[in-house]
Length: 499
Image (cartoon, rainbow, N blue to C red):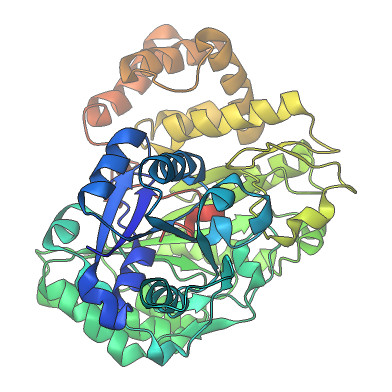
């Protein structure tokens, strides 16, 4: 193949939507182009060997926050052993602060921003001349109707074994400063009829799990309802052949018409990712996040009580202007709303995002290496931030895993954040680790903690056993033992880069 499109995905289940868009839009060069996906953690020599086995003239790499360091090693080796191969970079990680990056220095060319049109043109110029003189090429945003949809490029193996990422729109009208989507001026929809025809084709090929990467799925309620009706029709026609759809919702925009549609979905068919990030109005204003907290809370409450949707709700610790006490209040408020999962994330300084303007005033200290996690602020020192990191990890293991559905309620008591922070500190003192904890060991530690807090040994053992016996040996991808959910995606702050 003359041109290879390659990336290192966070895990095998994450099929790259971005590379498939490029392949779909290669035009006359498509027959000379192929796609190769790897997973982070692969040996650099093996990646390079597999790439060169195709004898490419051009290799285009998709660069993201989670793969930039490993891909830089691949590019460095590739240019050493095959300097004649032209390396082109694209993706969000190299689209901003481009001149500061070692991987950019190693490569021949970079496409920043939208690559659907610009990348094929660049490849044509490299192959046929005149050879481009500029290293960095700003991506041209074409009309949405001119972009060829890529869904036919999902293979049968992808459909059978991987998450199928789709998007009915690109962009976002909101300006949250921690998110790359804040740089968009608006949201741009694809033609709905053409999009639904592609979803129908995927369904006929066996696709049953659709993960929408739209930033604001419920922005246009009529569009949302038509897409949801597509899935409701499939469920009604084949109730024994379940379909599962994942959407991201704007939390304070849930009109009655949309509620009526949501309420019609059966259990196990719908997941919503809802970004709260902070319940502190001053912090929200500081990072340009518009959100009616009362409406958002009411909508989450309605979804938990009047729908069968699985709710995955996000909070971000370390935002400028927010201290631990403020975050704790927001956490407790969210726990009281009873979503199925709370994704406790730590702020990351994504390249190009306006959050950087707060660095000096709020003494924001970030890790210089990906994923650029905040290490300290003027309100949260480094040691406390590390405690929050551990809290987030243990929360995933105990609360979000669904393996301790009955136990977690007792463990949290009336002060969820304070109670779980105490448990987290104790856990770390016992383990000196947050990863590779055997489930048996975890269950015994949870039981020991309950006893330390005054619960009789027999009662603590029975409580943990009631959860453990029912879920310990089941796959982890279940929420509270009731609803299936798709393979895990990257944290929400960077989740839109996954495609």
